[in-house]
Image 1 (tube, rainbow, N blue to C red):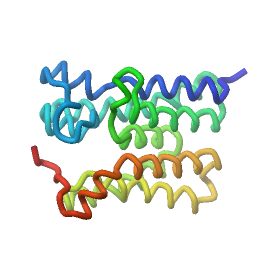
Image 2: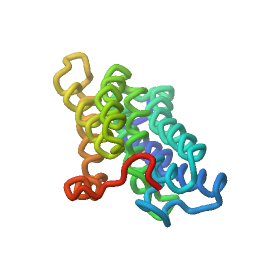
Image 3: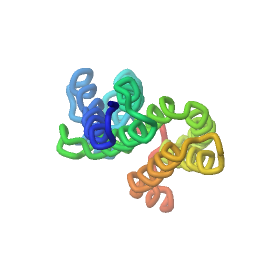
Length: 198
């Protein structure tokens, strides 16, 4: 018997709750990144507060968390619905990690990692929708939202995407919008920080 959805959710949340940005910031720069900048433990804030090496390391580890959650569930016999549940829980865990005082990141790279495991084509289109926006504007938040909404639109319209993955993609897009509320408000006021700002 494969892994059920409840077990998948618990596992995914646990994996997502590993505070990679906090650990990397402390190990490489001796700082708690949540005390500075946006107070997030995501890769962008780690980059600004602990430097590029720490930022890239956090980016890769956050994506790895998202990828690992559904892949392990798959290896343990869980179906696509259980895998999608683990992916969603990993995103929630990254945003509100039990192991770091429920103060985490925005779940962008964790979502990308999960999409790479569940639906690589949709993940690629999300990157195509988001990376150019970041490159042109240097607003990571705007590019992240563009990528998430691109992925959701593609998943909803594509008949080859499984219903559980389609629901996950829409959930992830909604989660990223909620997690970027402050960024959206700053973008509207013209006060959002750009990539490269410290």
